[in-house]
Amino acid sequence: MGRLTGIDTVLLLDLDGTLYVGSQVVPGAPETVRWLRAQGLTVRFTTNTDSISPTALADRLAGPGERATHVLVADPGHGATYDDLDAAFRALRSEAQLVTTQVNRIARRDDGEHLDTGGWVRLLEHATGQTARVLGKPSPEFLTAPPNALGRGAQSALVVGDDLAADIGGGHAVGAATVLVRSGKGDRPKPGADAELDAVVDSVADLPGLLQG
Image (cartoon, rainbow, N blue to C red; front, side):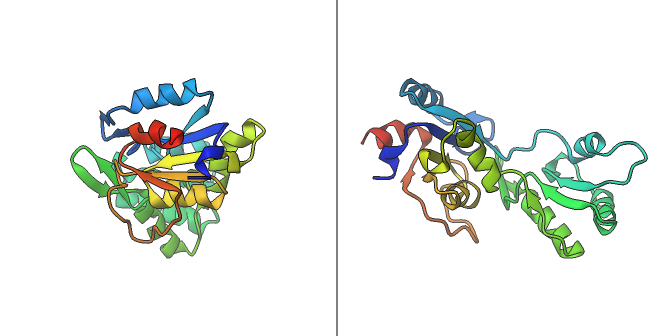
């Protein structure tokens, strides 16, 4: 608990699985965000959620007729096909660089668990011999940007999330305090997600009591 009492500037909140699960708001989450702000904390939201399709992103990043310089892998649930993967493979073999929004293994939606972006990234890594650059969590740059923008180090931040690898592992790696919520994916261990944390709570709604206590 000692590390949590020093959080006086930045609080980094995950979205999917922490403030909402699927399309459902976690009970007490809005009140918690208001309470955190009322305490003078700067609240920032950090998410690996992919909002548009990989095809649309590729269209934005690659000019017509120009050879692709990067392959961006986002949520395959938007409708990625073998042809998409093969085109990505061919671009990577032609010296494009592999980048991704995140490498989570599973996504939690209203009807349960689904394959997430990580498996597709690992497939392309295996096929091409490249190692993807992760732009979202647990990338250190992603998690240190909010406190750095305020002139503070990551040690002044608290990362709250439901993913042991992306949220807790990422936060721990940059020196931030971390709290795991059991909503979303945080209700059971994940393979390969061995990470140190400072506290575990059932819900983000329990955060005010934790920080006051």
